[in-house]
Length: 245
Image (cartoon, rainbow, N blue to C red; front, side):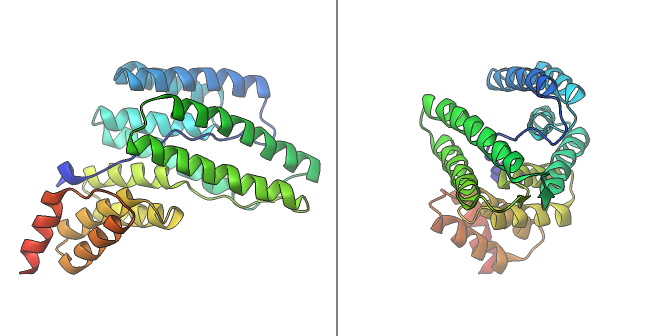
């Protein structure tokens, strides 16, 4: 079943947490950047070391926790992957409803994130424009749009963020590969809710339904994934339809 599981590798851009030293975050960013470079070169053991260094410098930085989880997934170290990705999820959850001490601080926080997102978009668009990269750019553009809306309003000092789809997607994959179907299903649903256009999440959800013998739901998930433009593995769809005959 795992051969049908799709995971979108998305590089996102978190921001400096309240009270975090900019110097520490800069050092952590450098290690995080090195980790992703090593990931691209499939040097997963070294990537683990880089991401671990990043989170030791700044434990509140979400992205290296995500990278650490992805590196452990690549090495099939699912317990470690789950632990890192759960930590990443918790950090994003902690941001929901975050209060700033002033409107100025809130606006500065958002503007810093936009600057970082712009840099990330340029990096994503500089490589070969695969469907995965195009989806990464789309999600980053959506983050940017939401932040711009917050800045335009200017009168809200509360942050209302959630767990990004790519975090839930990777965590669901880690649970799935650990045989934790209930947890995997929850995370794939969370990914789909966070990004309604995530065909990967819906396709993965179909695999969970197939594995747990809920064939009608599996076919429904496949059809929903196809509507997003995602190319569903034809063998997956064939397997599901054969069980419904």
